[in-house]
Amino acid sequence: MVSPPEPDSLIPEEHLMSTLAPLWRKRMETAFLYIRETLPDMPAPSWNEVAEKCGVSPFHFHRMFRLVFRETPGQYVRRLRLQTAISYLLEAPDKTVTEIALSCGFSSSQSLAKALKRDTGMTAKDIRSASMKRGGEVENLLLKLGHPENEPVRCMEAEIAARINFRVEDLDEFHLVSDGVKQFWPDYITANQKKMLHYSQRPLGIVTQADDLGKGYDYQQAVIGYMANHGGAAVTTFAGGRFLCCDVKIASETAYIALWDAIYNVMMQEGYELDPEGFGLEILHNPEAYISEKEPLNVTVKVKLRQII
Image (cartoon, rainbow, N blue to C red; front, side, top):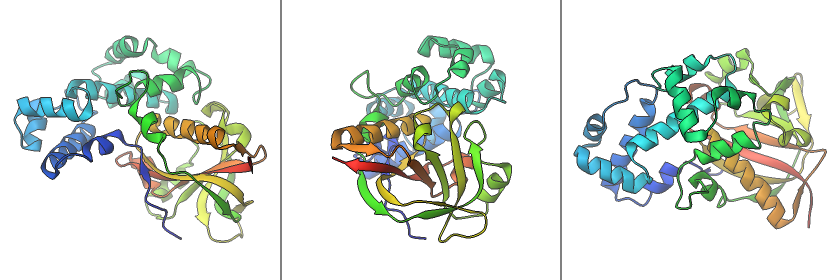
């Protein structure tokens, strides 16, 4: 299998740290990773502890963190916890609100409820009952909780996504080792596939028909399977054609939404049109990260086009 191109990072922290001198970049990377690793902890590590991990005084750490990441450490942690909690509310209907709250570092469901109401104006029930999870109110909510940009109405994930390196490619047919169509929501990867992810290095393909791409997760169906080099038993084959493609690294639902906004913006600006009989293909090059949630996903997205004006 040919290795994918180096992906464009949709992780704001990586962009913000890239301009720092090596010493401070290492310190801020240490802080960034430590805060994310301890996000579910209650109470969260004190800033003295985080500063000690970075080898800098608490006073200077707080100031430097704010200058680099455009928000205080407290604001950063609260936003990430809310972002994670909302993703669970959307993607884990079997989890109770209390379970979600405790897994995201909130002391109780009441604590999560207060944070949601204060920062989003919505309740957990409001979010779960939203019928279009890739559009409308919930999508705007997740973008609102993205990394703050200089413009208050725009998150940094959207600003970075606008600079993705897109390309148009003419591709041959491809194959997935698949057990057929799956309801995309809520558990679109089977238990057996989840087990296999821990032992396989093969990329995982997710194919969604064009008509389903704009729908909420509740209404999407997809064909899930490992990318294969040829056809055969238990293999689903998809026709080739002209595709709009990109390679990205993502670590949040907000970045994923920003990515698809960027795809549609490119199509409108460049005169591309979705093939109504086509599909979108997402290739997860490190699918084990989908299960562990401990590292970003490296994803190639290919959207089949009908014509180019």
